Length: 231
Image (tube, rainbow, N blue to C red; front, side, top):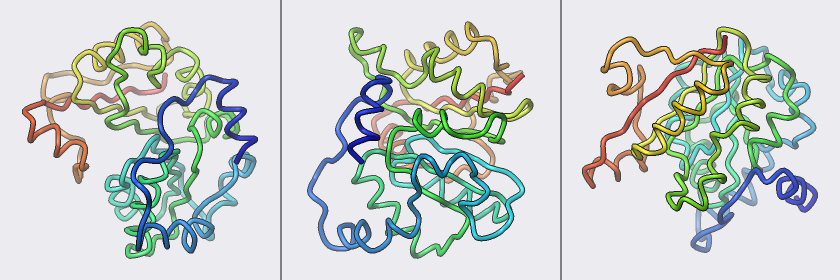
């Protein structure tokens, strides 16, 4: 863990707290009892097919899965596909593990460090898609450089996602949405797929929602759903 943290800090890829409220009860038990079942080390990402107990038809990454609502829903609908969830926030990982045990899914594996470390190790063009939903917007101008969507991380995504694969981004923060559109356009390795307003106003197919989205809607903020195709 310490080695990964030091590497993350050298890359400057992760910012923010790793733990919020103290874990209690089922969540504390989940971290001790369940995390070893679904967790994998960064070096194991070099051969992602070996992470799963059965053959997989493809590989999908969710970056910062929060409480895991979408990741579990996505993996349930696609039992043929392998899913990797990256979440350095311990409280989110604990919530995910509790629900993952109930779901009993074998096609999910979890990474408890920054996604940049994982992307650096995945084979080239190994991902069918990657999701980034409701990331920390770092609203203060001096912190914008900490946003995940930036040139070095887009280089990582472009290397890991196969041509024709997708990167999906959802946020309720208009400035981060505009930032993402500008960064993706400037990078040049991805094409925004929207053809009409509903393409970014309507949720993705089979969208289960997330607790962060529910809070945004309660507070009157409108989400935006972007999809970019790897060229």
